[in-house]
Image (cartoon, rainbow, N blue to C red; front, side, top):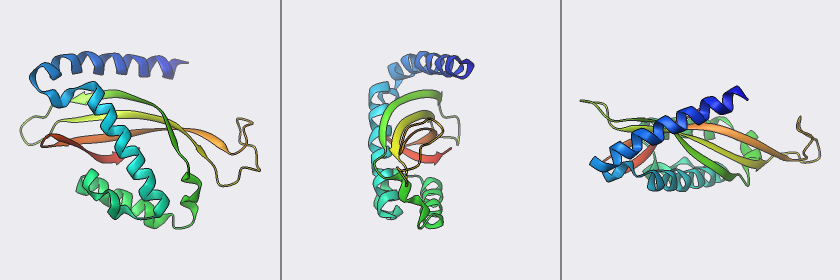
Length: 152
């Protein structure tokens, strides 16, 4: 339960920062940030499913692309469990306005559900073949756009 309230606090702080930042620069619009994160999520899922990082290159920083490509290449057969991932929630949990050489960035908490490889074996939750997942996605501003830089 503690973790949830810590996330709630981070979401509130990020939201408060966003409401100030968006007044100076529309790139910080919460709705369009989450919408872009959602679109990139589904593009990345498609790339993972097709085992082809090239199809999402335009949505990623060079660093993000290299990481995704390594992930896809490294999980040649194991990655099939990622089919049918569905996004259930996106929260902006951290925003960092750029300084000098460092660009604007934000971190999103991505939550969803996906089918597992073997839906005949019950998971710890007792559900068959569907698992919840949660990841932190890091985005960096490039021009008037947000690009995915990494996933944790």
